[in-house]
Image (cartoon, rainbow, N blue to C red):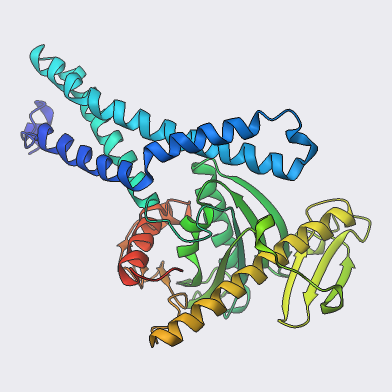
Length: 384
């Protein structure tokens, strides 16, 4: 074999059946266009353009923001569909030209474009599965260290880094609202907002308990430890949600923001913690210098968590009427093993990989896609 490599010899690759590949992605795109209803999207764009063109639109800033946001989202979706359709139609021409001219470089470029279009259509197909009531909204993610002491706190921080890198790779806007650092290492908890189309629907499948098995860097005897961290994902509230919060039902505490190791990062009591007495929900915000701004943000987070609680209660009532005893899929949803072997495995979908470093660096797209498809197939007639 060494001689073969030195001579530049390589085994011939199986010829790709371009016509079949293109026909397959074309059929998938046709299905997507029907589901997303391109004619309706175009009509919606016209409607929102007319609403955005009203002279006194910005007399009501909240409504103006909603109209322009919806217009931007619809236009983006139309452009995505139109661009993909054009790319699919261009593929046979690119491949035919390369083959007729026996240009291997051009053929390689055409193959890369075919692979790129196939991936883009697959991602869009997954988005069509996100049809829940709140799926198109921004997401609020809270990560908490659970059983495992300092190991769990370090693990919670590693999960935070994994999600932030995932968002960075996808150019999602992230606002960290609050982080509570542990004394020795890691974090007790953190809450951050992810702003992107379908952020909640996409990331909601990450909710649950994440289990880590590794040789602890904090154990002088280098023993294997198991630790846990919980991930909660809720949709951001909208003006139409009508989540009323009685001031008598909450307790507001103010304190000074702090960084790792207790280092003060603010010399005033600007951080805000709100406790909802009736439910026991506690939220905090310390990312702003102003106590007023932090309170407003914390109230918005509390509204989102109460909205999700209401949705879960309504779903539980429906499931009880249906006789559905399947329970939540969130508990211990994924296992990350770094010793004695390398493996990340989703316990719901059975999707797994041995490339643990890539996963912890934010490459979790395959896990998210598998989770979305699993959720749809396991509960096809239920609204989450």
